[in-house]
Length: 253
Image (cartoon, rainbow, N blue to C red; front, top):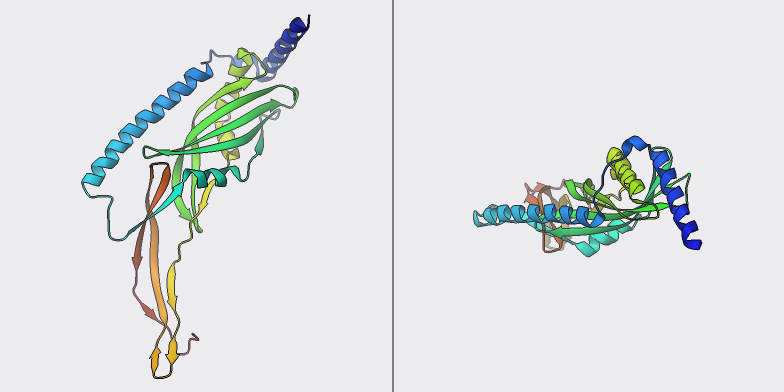
């Protein structure tokens, strides 16, 4: 009897979610295992192609320059930064709430990927849920105010676990698909502090018979490119110094 009651409750929840989403959104969905396997296959194929291109560039000597500095960001550091502001929540379509709970960076094969775990609930049925797996690549990485910052472009999402049936799970995935821009905005920002001085100042020196004028050595720093290799995100920074600017005679040390 208890089993029948439980089944009826699950069926009622699934039907209610179906009504909330709208029957027109129905579509055949893949299993979470199949969806994840396909996403991993695409990611690995992209890594192979990117590594082949990277090796060819290295053999041509295009990666090594006398003015380039490399700064590495480990996956563990990025994980702490990404998970710091979590959980983050956002209302979708007026009645559904997505809550991003965990982020995992993957810097492999010259591809920087981020995997997120989130939970979707309905304000009309707070006791029912759908756990969602989302993954995407880091795009538009740049140096902004002492931070290496970028945005996530989602490329994969699937319901990994839910309190409702397959029909409602497919509708959840359709909700994510049609509101992808909103979901991307609720993801934690990728911003890793990278402090780079823009100038080197040397004060005037005056000690008895020994004296020297001070001045400034400007530093021109810009992000050349970003590589993701061996579980690290490498920011290759192009840096040039000069010309030297002597300080005015009246400038204090």
